[in-house]
Length: 122
Length: 275
Image (cartoon, rainbow over all chains, first blue to last red; front, side):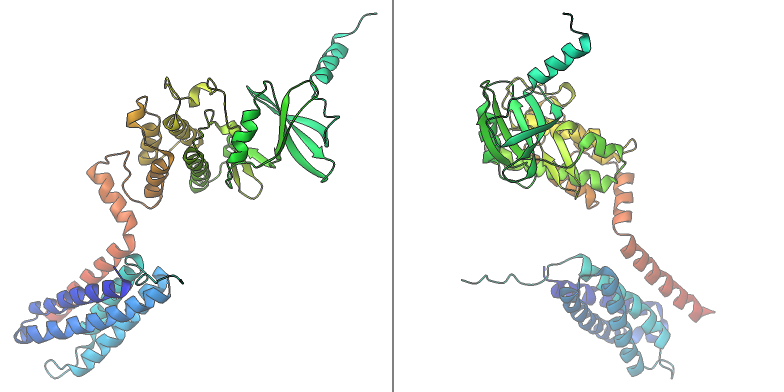
């Protein structure tokens, strides 16, 4: 499977699971569906970008670094747009988002193919 | 007149040396002796280079033709073949500067390096098998590791009874599975004292006394070595569960650390909220 697709699927799945963990917080449980959708979209974007990077650069270390950087950036954007009890939950969103990005970066480096096979010159 | 023993020995030695007067080669020194002939280092006067010159005990010109057909980076190329005045056949080939595999292993190379040499030998065997040739006498003394790490498989045999006991398959009729047996024996001979059980199992499977229980060919054996090097399960060994888990852990250590870090962060955030 293509690395971009790997990133997409991993990002969506991990993002959804990360969003679902909000169930443990009663104050946001009523918004769970919205959080899960938002988190999966964040995971999707991070996954596609990290998968695209993995197609260009083959390095597990750099994959983790870039994945965690994308994860952190998009988690920051999501946290900046969210408000719980009158404050932005930066720590609660950015810290797990950072690690989820690193996991997606690792997986896109270690699995998947570089891209669709190209036809040779006739 | 009496001739002393030392003079007699010298005369015997000189008489046994091949007469290269009608050739462009100049004898330098004996570098090896096998069941089918003697290998000398010689100088090619015409091209001013050193070559290995093998003089066959029997009129086995077929050996030179057989090796000349095998064009592979791990098979020593034949330069020329000819006949000596006494009727013996000789051929010249590239003189490989390096050490035989047994001497090379004595210098304690890493396991990965030992397996690299075995892989090169296996690739040469696999190629030869596709050309209908089997080695028949694969052993550490017939594998050379050159100065630049290049590997050469020497002494491709045409003698149907050739073979060194500990590397020779107990098969009535030698075929490519006999070479697989010898490759397994070669693998076992280069492994260090403490060896991972999966790698030991690969050698044991290749050396099975039943040809049907061995790897079907050299590439199948090499694939199992590749799987071992990649941290995957090998075909030769049904590993116990604890070993499978340990292999999974070491192969996916980074991923497991990241997942642990994620779980730890989640727990930490959860408890920070409570207290």
